[in-house]
Length: 169
Image: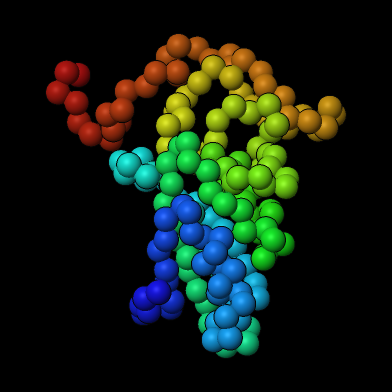
């Protein structure tokens, strides 16, 4: 574990977050009681493109600890639900937004997106425009998908700035 100007930080591989977090919870000099949150970061250019960050709090010692681990699209991480029950929601959100799944997670289902949505929102490989609109329909009380009715001139646009002077005019 290294100490930086931003607090305590530890980087580990995908096999060790669970034992490390259990150690931090049970050790006399850390006594981490709270999993504040778990978040994900996508780095598409890296071999292990997803980073999972656990932010922890020790109220006894008034300290925060950050544990980071990296994984790829297919490697699953170990869940930390047993030492930190509040992690259920955070791990669900990381799976829903990034596609990083946990081994034997007790409740791995969509939390922020529609259950019929294919893919994960924060992966940086989604198309910029499409042919289907997803919206919440209040009378039906559910998320509906509808084809977009858009003329061709609005679907593909010129990326040149309209404020620059054009030489072909």
